Length: 343
Image (cartoon, rainbow, N blue to C red; front, side, top):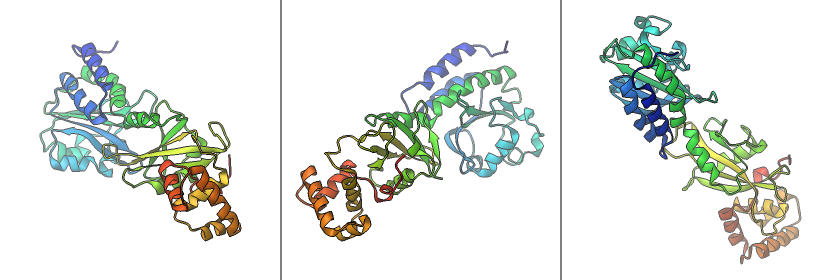
C-alpha cells in the first residue's frame, strides 16, 4: 500500500472535481494549484503543455519563477533537458532522484539554485489513454519537500491533472457543435493531425491529405472559419459528397494547434449536381465563364447552361450572387478537390 500524506483522499477528490469544471484549461490549472499546495508546500510551480513539433513547452500556468527561468522554460534546451532526465514519464522525480547529480544539470546550477530553490519534483502529464499532454513542475526552498508520500500522491493525481489541462477536450466540444458531425481531427501547424478525445477520424482527414491542404488555404480569415464540400462516396456521404467544416484555434490554445476540421453530411444541396458544385468552386475562386470552360474542358455554351441551372436552383439573379451564396453557405467543391479520386 502506498504511503500517502494526510488528507490525501480529500485532496484527490477536490482535484478530480476541479478537473471537470466548465472552464478553460488555464482556469482549471489555476484552480488545481491550491489543493496541490496542501500536498507540496511549493514556492514555484509550472503547468506546461507540450508542443511536440517544436520540441518545447507552452506555459499554461506559471508562478514563483524569475524572468530568466521563465524564458528558459519555453526553449528547446529546456525540453531536451527534461527529456534526458526522464521528467516526461509518469513517475514523479525529485531533484535528488535525477539520474545525474544536480551539479551536472546546467539549469539547476545556473538558474534554479541561484533563485533559492533547494528541491523540486517534476512529472509528465499523461492521459489515462497514454497521450502526453505536458509537464507539472514544483519547486521548494526546503530539501524536506516534497516528501516521498507527497510524490506518491502527485503520481496518482497526474493523469487527472492531464485531463484537466488537456486542450483537446475543449476542441472536441467545438467539433461537436457541427450538425451531424461524423468525424473530426485537429490540424497542427506542421501539417500533422491529432485525434480528438472520444471522436472518430475519417479517411479524408489523414495528415497532408488534399482536404487538409485545402483547409489550410481557407484559414486566416475573420472569423477564422470556413465550410465547403468534398467528393466522397463512402459512409456519411450523400450525393457523393461530405461537408468539411473548420474552426481556427484561438489564442488560448497551444500555438502548435491550428484548427479543428470536422466531417458531416453535406446538408441541403438545393439539387446542385456534382459538376455544378465544382463550377461553383471555380466561381468562388473568382474564375470567369471562359476560365471555367477551360478548366472543365467544355464549350463555353455548356458553361452558360450550367450557370443558368445554378442560378435557378439557388434562386439568385446572377453569377456573382451565386458565387457569394455558395461561399457563404459552403455550397461548392474547391477547385483543388474537383479531381480528387473518390474513395
